[in-house]
Length: 345
Image (cartoon, rainbow, N blue to C red; front, side):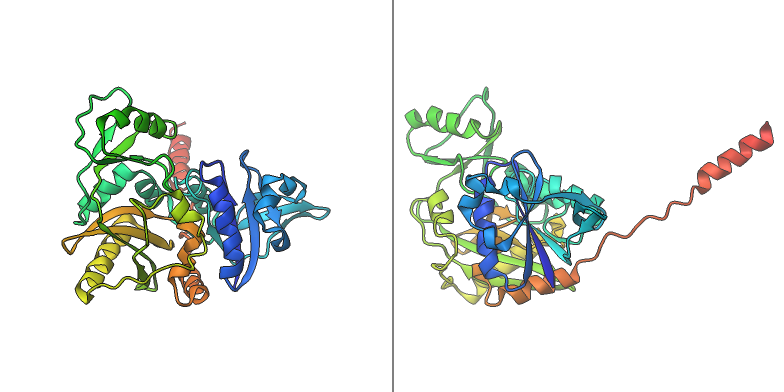
């Protein structure tokens, strides 16, 4: 199967997406095409040989062929018109804005692409941490108590607290504070990236677990459950400067907790409408109870390091994806109205 990896985007997480795509070159053992989305939202075809981070930071991608999105896929203009890329299934690997907020999902669905990634509604629910909390509540999955904050809100927070921009991932703009005199600076940092902040109690030493998976042909396929090593919390450096996941640690947990984590994942996946996507859910465990932390709809490097056979898993998901059924337009209603008007004339 031939895959097209779509990455980049006009996002705070643009560079992370590039690194993610570079990792995929090694992790996904398949015929790959690479489609880069620059900050101006132009599409470029990148040769696999050029898939290294500094190729983009130095602007060398601008000499690559420009691509255009059309029905069924990407193509490039030539002497004989638009020639489509030879791709069976595209993978949305844009992190943050464009990739996880629904823009790319809308485009891909509109142009009838077969793609791995969250659809429009699932993107909206998982991109905004406040909506994610509401989704979890609706399907019976616990979350920590939280507050939403805007710039002019009156604050009544108990310390210690963790502040997160509501529509941003990769731990960007996140602060953990234990004293009130640290609050204003932490809010200023968060509001640089978003106008809505999520405030949650920071619980020292809480266990965290990552579980990736998807549904294909009515069957759920799960990765191993990882218990990541961390400092106070999983910051940007810990998440992405060891991006290959070589240090992934399989969780040493009871069968009961494993089952609870998987059941929570299934509830989130099905209630959120994540069909067609490989997602990663990050959970807390407090007194053996499971709490959803967040949903990663396009996880870094597609969480390849959590799967024993990542390539087979991706192919299985791709083969299960169906293109949205077309609506047949016949203009019967308009013809009927036109006919009635003709009789009355």
